[in-house]
Amino acid sequence: MLLASLWLALWALPALVASQSADIITSVGPKTSIAAKRAIRTCNITSYGAVADGKTDISTALKAAFNACKSGGVVVIPNGNYALANWVTLSGGNAWALQLDGIIYRNGTAGGNMIFIEHGGLDGIDVWSTNIWIHDIMVTNKDEYVTVKSPARNILVEQIYCNWSGGCAMGSLGSDTNISAVTYKDVYTWSSNQMYMIKSNGGNGTVSDVVLENFIGHGNAYSLNIDQYWSSESTVAGNGVQLSSIKINNWTGTEANGAQRGPVRVICADGAPCTGVDIKDFAMWTETGNGQWYACRSAYTDSPSFCLKDSSDHVSYSATTSTATVAPTGYQAPKMSADLATLTWGTTAIIPIPAIPTSFFLGTSPLKPLAD
Ligand SMILES: *[C@@H]1O[C@H](CO)[C@@H](O)[C@H](O)[C@H]1NC(C)=O
Ligand SMILES: *[C@@H]1O[C@H](CO)[C@@H](O)[C@H](O)[C@H]1NC(C)=O
Ligand SMILES: *[C@@H]1O[C@H](CO)[C@@H](O)[C@H](O)[C@H]1NC(C)=O
Ligand SMILES: *[C@@H]1O[C@H](CO)[C@@H](O)[C@H](O)[C@H]1NC(C)=O
Ligand SMILES: *[C@@H]1O[C@H](CO)[C@@H](O)[C@H](O)[C@H]1NC(C)=O
Ligand SMILES: *[C@@H]1O[C@H](CO)[C@@H](O)[C@H](O)[C@H]1NC(C)=O
Image (cartoon, rainbow, N blue to C red; front, side):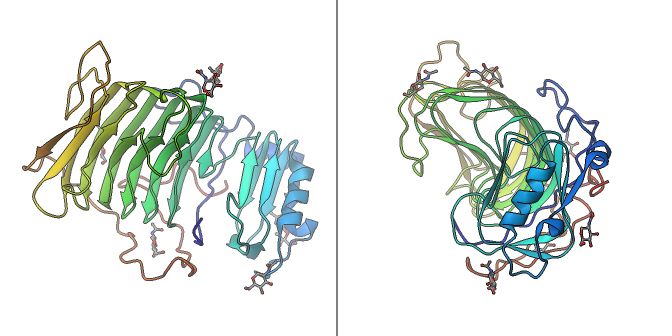
């Protein structure tokens, strides 16, 4: 794990959900309003020993505040600078919320998650749960962004601004993967490793009904990258995770170098060929040179495009690559005005904390004001 300061805005947890995508089955987001939670109890970490001096470890205070509010209430980290030296797991909460107004500095060296929320559900970066809504987030870091892990069902991720990060992903997937009904929409990715990656290496189980729509990318290494032979993951026993109904709609923009890393890479497991990988309204072009490639392996579609095969036999096939030397129509996409221009600090330096942006995706406003 790299030392990087991660900044994210945790927006209000609304009671009602205005926006829903086709593949989301029921409403997403909290079932109890923030007002109702507040009416039960507010657990301010400063009342449990936290000191906003940027030095004192708040882990004990945060856990104590969580324990007091975990059955209903709002844990508040008020304005101020705090240090977290020991990572905390907040487990078993119900009808609670975390209101993060302050800034938490990473003051420890352990790997893993600084704050790990489980068995309760809340906005997060790595998420596995049911019925979760994650929106209006900007991250600058050197690792992953909003990543869905297994098991997960009914997750909506929208208005996401990757401002120089690893990019959004699903995985890594292993044994008994069980992910369904996941939608990402309005995702802007700048100077990241990928716009979206599904990654596994062996394993078993299923991923179904995924929608990745309205994505804009610039300056990224990979764009769409489904890799079921992901070399950074040790091989897991099994024929491969079965992917089905993966809909990629309305992607525009440019990738860093399409001859090096093409914008469409759908490398599925030979032991579990992907089905229903449908790529529509996808127009991306290279920022370097005058060509790009598309690669597919054991990948099937109901709507032929790029190198995807349309057939009902779903037998494995080895990687095929096609190249394009003419830019597709309509690939041009605007850039956000607040893109981080250059990375001037190394992996051990603190990333400066920007002001909260007024928009997380082109032409949109945040879906909810901060902590209303
Ligand atoms: C939390 O406690 C701090 C320090 O007492 C106070 O300044 C702040 O207003 C409190 N915040 C809330 C939301 O209660
Ligand atoms: C946190 O970091 C500061 C500055 O490096 C240091 O003075 C302080 O002792 C650290 N606190 C903990 C709890 O590690
Ligand atoms: C997958 O998860 C769903 C809940 O999201 C559950 O109902 C189903 O039984 C799980 N399937 C398997 C094979 O574990
Ligand atoms: C997945 O693989 C694990 C480990 O090999 C095995 O225990 C499990 O039964 C498999 N699950 C399915 C659904 O095949
Ligand atoms: C496609 O995405 C763009 C943003 O890149 C958005 O403005 C447009 O409305 C989307 N088109 C459709 C048909 O949703
Ligand atoms: C992107 O990161 C840079 C550097 O931290 C910052 O100046 C800029 O405001 C960030 N953009 C947004 C939208 O927060």
